[in-house]
Image (cartoon, rainbow, N blue to C red; front, top):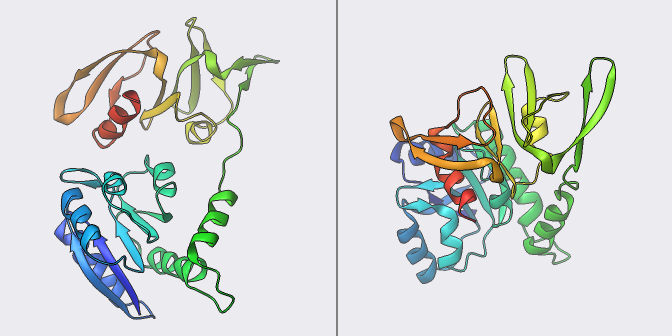
Length: 255
């Protein structure tokens, strides 16, 4: 029997998760369904830790990651969220898996299988904490790139990463704009490039734009909960922060 707690502020999502858990080959007991940071922190201060926690990232009263600062969470966590920008923080806070909504039943069962493999005590007495640390070590990213090789005609040259003010997709091409205003054609797609950039210096504000913190001059409220950016230098593309990235962008910009 796996005893779990679900932290989810959307009732349909919580109900779907409970249904999927009920189909798992091993019995799963849901001890509680919590819908806020405040309620969750209070619950964990008064009740023993479950075997496993399912946690949405964005709750009605803030990011669920705040729970780790208000309560001593010792259980492994499977994050279930519609947002992909919190993945690194999730794995730094007991995360063993990161599932994007809408949840896929196969992926959920694979995550539970990972939990059993990593975290269930074995005969030799190895606890989940040791295995979790091994998992973290295996997931450590390579050093962030210090420069990118770019092509101009038949010639190759490099541009230092620290000199890039932003990177953006325009049609099928990806460009890097340096602080001097020069545009460089990048050889890889934006998702691949993003993974090679330091998250302290760069943030992906939309599907087509990654910005360097030093390029952000002003931030303006915009329509439908989005933000509008003033960048220096400014690329010739839309400079809106997607609504689902606003909270993460504010947190990143305020560090």
